[in-house]
Length: 223
Picture 1 (cartoon, rainbow, N blue to C red):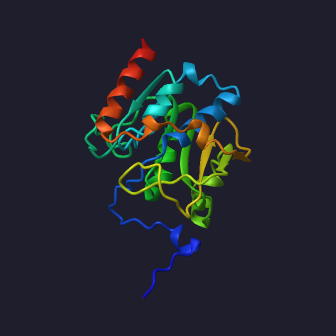
Picture 2: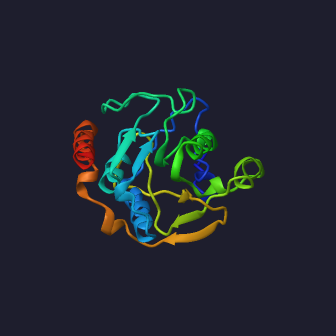
Picture 3: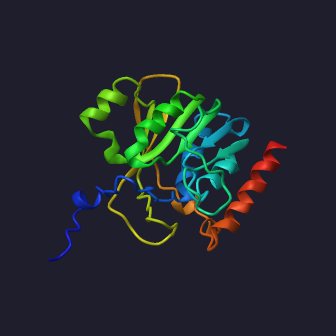
């Protein structure tokens, strides 16, 4: 039997209930968010940020390029030296200026709720565009605490399971959802920017080497 590769089927990207949902975020997609925030007048270079689902640190690195400091952890040890911490069921997190992350799909609502309750200035999550759908999600989240902005990528953000790679394609569309201090949702498009924001150094063969640079960069900016 031939594989059904229609867009509707491929966009589901179903994960097992106990899956880590290991889909690293290409750094250029995080830079696109940071560039948008800066263009909107947010002085993120003076703010701190938390990344509670940091995976192998591929979002931490670009965040550290824009924010004064970045606190990162993950529930699983990916071998890159990040603290292992359960964001949802561990101790209540201390307040930070921003929380920015790529949450596990099946736990995204809980991540967003916890982030909104522990972030002073804003929350941003990158999600499949299909995350905007759903009556239950509307009743539990969007009706009560709608995002301020939906930032839809005009280019496809390619996420591979278990690895970061510049190659490949996807049928899955992604968008950033951004919560600020208002309840009026506005749709914006992120124009083509991958070529400008992507760097060869983003795709380190050894993720531990890449993260060592992240730690140094963060400490220098704090100092």
